[in-house]
Image (cartoon, rainbow, N blue to C red; front, top):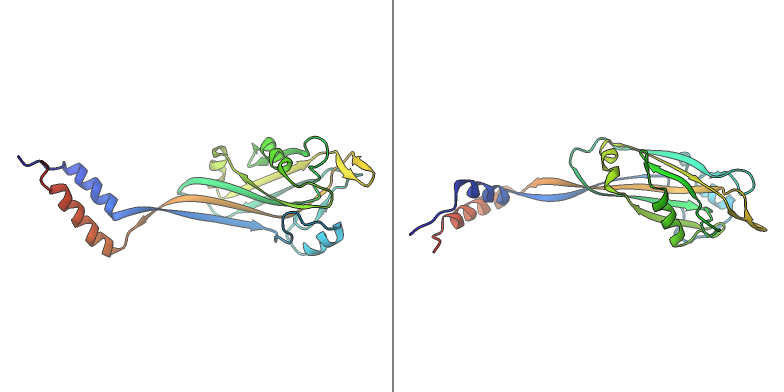
Length: 213
């Protein structure tokens, strides 16, 4: 007795033979990465290297004896229609002094989503000495994906004391932004070449009609 796969199954297999899923990345960087993770320098070389970069990058904001660092920046790249698979934010920051007592991130948001705790955890994982530049990569949670899809992402960061002054811990905590990169991975349906279609679809149909014992 001959048995054949249903027409719906044949159509689904043919569709699978005619398309595949690709991953595309949208990557936007603000500022230039002037220093590698762990580099140490005084404020003057930091600001000199960052001269001409868009604010707030390349600037030293606040000071250990005067005011805490606070800044925001915006990525603009156009709306994303495809499904977002993942996102990450890379941050190069100088003299943020997370090696001091307690947590130095007072507030950190991505399009209003509070990620303060996550960035504090990264800051405490390594680096943060006085006059040290560090690079951190934060994996963005799915709660940020709707904002990422909008094509405009606002990032806001404020630090808190204590910092690391010349004579011990200080009341305030100034810092400088070296650069920031936003990377978004999306799922993109991608048609196969006509050659693969000519080979794949007939093969799928032939297999579907093969006698099943």
